[in-house]
Amino acid sequence: DAGVIQSPRHEVTEMGQEVTLRCKPISGHNSLFWYRQTMMRGLELLIYFNNNVPIDDSGMPEDRFSAKMPNASFSTLKIQPSEPRDSAVYFCASSFSTSGYTGELFFGEGSRLTVL
Amino acid sequence: KQEVTQIPAALSVPEGENLVLNCSFTDSAIYNLQWFRQDPGKGLTSLLLIQSSQREQTSGRLNASLDKSSGRSTLYIAASQPGDSATYLCACPNDYKLSFGAGTTVTVRA
Image (cartoon, rainbow over all chains, first blue to last red; front, side, top):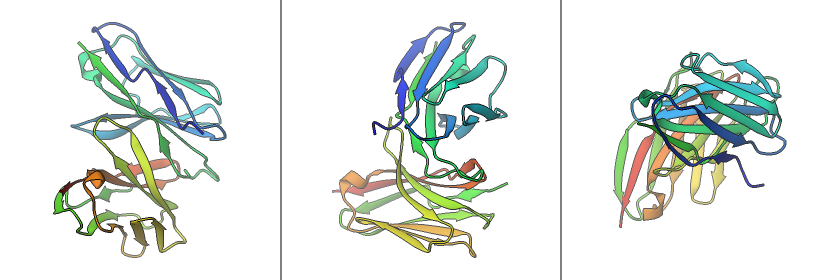
């Protein structure tokens, strides 16, 4: 398997622009997570999907952030409008979960976002 | 809420020395515990997953132990190499949410 695939790897944009990050989870996995990593805050869980359904979006910073998972093989994280404080590395991760518990978690390489 | 702590935050050792990385957690009712490695500018790579029913897990030079009663896990890396330089994180789930430690950054000097 190719692992979790994220795109783009790097994104530089100007404040106010829309940013869309993409993720393809590992085939067969039923759980998908979006994380954000910064030096100040470490890894933060933004949103969790199970069987394509958003279960927990309490980590989404504000209404400027939205995420979708239209099918089992694709998810997007959108920021509109973007702000400099959104600059971070955004990771997508997937796992096979049973009985509500997360199994081994696999991460993508991340999307490094810089908002000028 | 599960709190995961990794001490020390950084470690520097000469090549060939064995590495011992510590992870402690507050809630012993964990389902599993996972160790990750992160290289600069890269994603997290899964190293080992220990199920709650296991006491240890081994992969090559890596061995991870789990003591639920004391809320501790230890990652041992035998005969360290410069290529082992990275940040090592441990994480354990409360249901679907993983609580991550802040990581231990390891430097292996040639």
